[in-house]
Image (cartoon, rainbow, N blue to C red; front, side, top):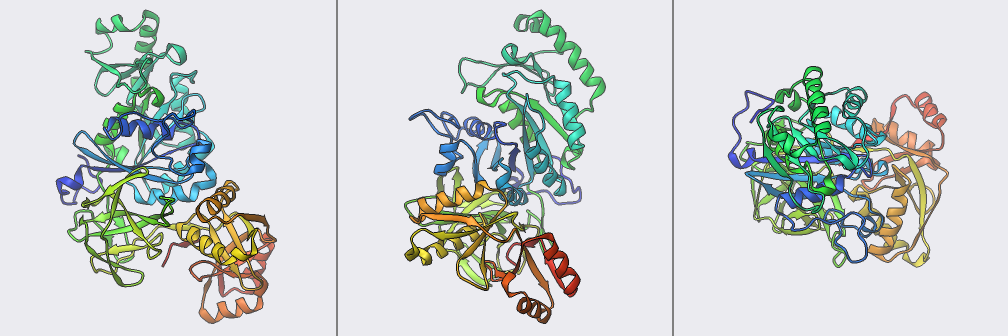
Length: 535
């Protein structure tokens, strides 16, 4: 298995077999359906569900919130672990909707590679481009799956050209589609010289594979009509002339992406993609921390929290912190140091996820994602170690783009509302600001749909109907600088000052002019649009 850093020691076999990756795409490209099929091929489920199920039909496994089930969209990243052949896959399904991009951004800090799903008819869409930029910033290796080839799709060369131009990355075909839309028969596997035929009758069946000896093998004519076969031979010949051949090192460095074609809903092309992840995605990689890098082969356990989900089980007010293990071999019941509070913490009931199903994790290795049930001790950005005071860096919190004030429709429930809002703030679902003057809270989010999600979750999970109302403020900035300068600034701008749920000072602005004025009048104070999570 190739490794980016050639001078690193070999990883223990258990760690080397792990592949931790996220699935990214524009909404509706078929990301959640693909996740379902991964679970099916990994033997984790017997029958894949549909995102929009009719009546009592099976729902998807990875969308566990009521709102996700009702709308057929993913609004929260979910993690799943399962085995495929000799590999252990840790898959994180991220929200495609741009209103939840912050959740996705943080998720990408916890994975070693990304699978980009694009729609064969629509090509590269705006949200795909945004998420791709995030992967580019982190130099994540990317594997591409072009979905929905069984519907009317664009020309294969056109799709590849668009990815190369819009995302500035080399594309190499790992498979080549035979026909498209109603005529879509399957793919020619360019890496293994195989013919893969799609079965339209049974959506949960693995495609039939026929071993061939090159494109001139007479066997091909038995399965592919003459006109499609001639077209396939021409296109593959052109592709081999014009497009780069697969270079595993370039894939690991994030400069090249192999592309597979298929149809997730028909289970076609998924197995080949999984084999590609096993072969070309990296093993668990080192994580950046404030004093040094953490290598996965280190014997001492360390990990960081990249997501907190409240109330995954509506019957219990539980909160689960999703932790990515950065190093070591974790065993249930271990005592770990919670670096932020410097207190020891016994992890007695860690869980492994299969979407909303979970089982107790007796052990886990670097690269795995485990859930730690807790009552608010763990927050996004927290690091747990076996004693060393390390802090994993690079998990950002973004300034919200939309601000609204929130109040409970029943004034007697104000105290309960405060508790609910604080939980959502710690989960990272929203920013909650308490203005220095006046009562009530200002809630900040990245996208308008988040207000709907929050209102529905506060009502369903806490029984508090709430109303969001327009706020006089339009954005928020964190204030940093010398302690006395910040205090002077806060005292002279009281009507704009609030505190976030960590107690940090925030400046609420109405116009860009406010920000410019502060930079002019208070040069010793900095206004920041991002802050590192939980210093």
